[in-house]
Length: 304
Image (cartoon, rainbow, N blue to C red; front, side):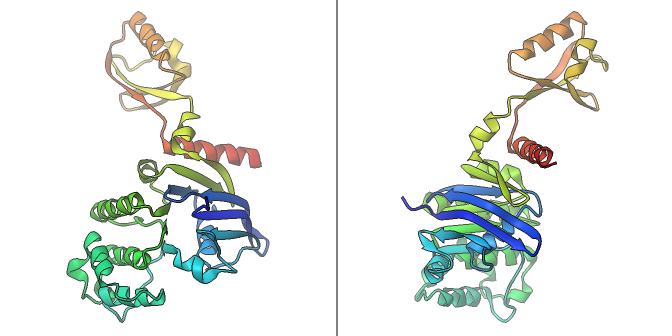
């Protein structure tokens, strides 16, 4: 099966700066995929190369089997990109902007799909409003609409919810999840890791232009064996036997590191022996943020 996006040995240099180094990645058709990394990791550079806005120094990329250089027309028809920046044409209304965007891709008689996008992104009452008069959140919705107007099978969302309100997030994710269920491939970059964990199946993590992790979110989280136990106790002092497990103390709460669930009982046994009552107890399991921090720190240590 041809992947939705295939990236082979891609490198990108800006003078002496290596933005990407030998990146290899396949994103499958119908996936909801997360591309994560700190600022400057190379995410936007990679997206720019996929979208044809930049040319790789080395390697190749194809979208739905079409090379982004030698078959650029077909590749771009397969792709819709929502950029980070608020870029808009100030001379047109929302509907006019979407009609014109349809024309860029040679899509005629697109009114029904444009109406569906406008309704699903709660833009109906702004459809005939000039773009200049829209709030930042509304402009963000129009950018999403423009990326979807030609019904691309592959959609890239580059920080789509940065600085937007809760209502837009809920509206956007409801629509995007439906598109994914209908067979569209979604690639998401975000600093809101809880969004990536809730929405995506697999994740690639970039650090200094290299992929340092690539797997399903479930498998990545499963590699972190350490859990933690948050306790509110009848005493402000921990027994000496537990001090080595203390991760942090925040207010009345002690957070202890545990290696597995069986260790909970040994912690409780130590507390009982010291006549300390447990007033509250919560087992904290690792999440994608823990994986992200762990991978970034480990890679930083290895590179030194």
